[in-house]
Image (tube, rainbow, N blue to C red; front, side, top):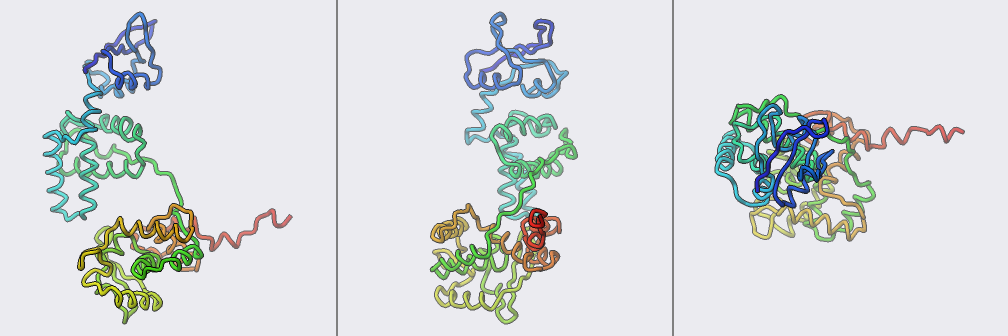
Length: 363
């Protein structure tokens, strides 16, 4: 149902009069605007006539003639599986580009999903007509109102920047699209005692091997599951991680203790291709199932922390740093492109902190 916005003077102030027939969704949206008031005399809601309010009411150009807009139709479209034709065409073009550049499947999937949400929200606007004010509106009316995370918002920024810099080069000024401010959170880690308790508690040798490898070599979940039999070099005591994040390969040392565990696992399961296979021989172990293995083992070990598989990687890096390993080596072992990424572990390592004496202790 459409609605009408008219600039008026009310009690000497510039206001926007908002008229619409009974619409609970729209009524809720208007009431949420700062300074929104109901006038019995006007029989309408009104808000301050400001550029920000005009933008919030889907009026991207503050000097343009006010027009009718429809928030209820937008909400219906966002909740439906319907994809407008112009959005579908944009996604096909974007997919074709991403495939030609050999982006990883997970990246292609996440970028397309982010662009789909963005373009659907701004529909019926065509991509070539979208501008920076539209992007700000999307951040406020979709990202923030739906309490999406900063990392999700950053993913949308990545997808939108790439799409508009390669496919549609109109109106949207790429350089002015800013990333969200990220909170500086320390990585979550388990103590060495908790890691030992966790691994000792797991009786299934396959699950024990998977969890041990994730911690012992600082691997991401996908890196564990992508390992093949040829990636383990037991003679040279090395593990090869191929085509990891960013398309990079790396090599990490693997201990004799872990080699023995993997040999025992191999004798029990005899995998054909992947080191850890699913129910079907020759197929990769399922990522969701791997997460559930950790969750179940945590519960059995009575470790009441919301740990994920990535916590094992964080714990590996932190424990290396605690033991005195140079940060540059840890960067190489983890496959970090920038040393700044690796430096986050200095915030949770107790190597130097434990040597600090509180002035309280000298009183």
